[in-house]
Image (cartoon, rainbow, N blue to C red):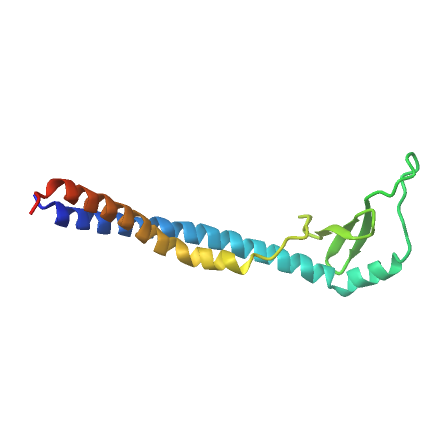
Amino acid sequence: MNLREGTRRLALLLGVAGVIVGGLASYVELQTALEQRARHNRFEGLVASDVVKQERKSLAGWVSIDPKTGERIHWDQLVNKGGIKTIHWTEDNQIESIVPEDGQALYPTPAPAAGTYLLITLFPILGFFIPWGVIRAIGWVGVGFTQSPK
């Protein structure tokens, strides 16, 4: 049995398996990032629409107050135009969410960070080098124990 050659082959085999697992993780993470970017773009597009700009102008100085407590409260504005059904406002008249005509509420969602895309590309690379390096290190130590002194 050749321990050195067996270790090399095992390291390559597990490295290739790591690439496959890393590729699957990349795919899942990429889908999540693309969905997050789509939600971000859709919300920002609605916030920048003429309908929302017009509604925001009409709210200048307007405050919603709870009659029982006297405190400012969140409130909903029924719009039903420009593809927007309802706008949910915060107590300081910022948009909390928008409900388009399809009924699925959209919330402010940050765009995925650039580091997310870098990490997605690194998953397959790390998937190869981590198991490959671990097996190579274990093999290197094992060879040290099996070789006779010179």
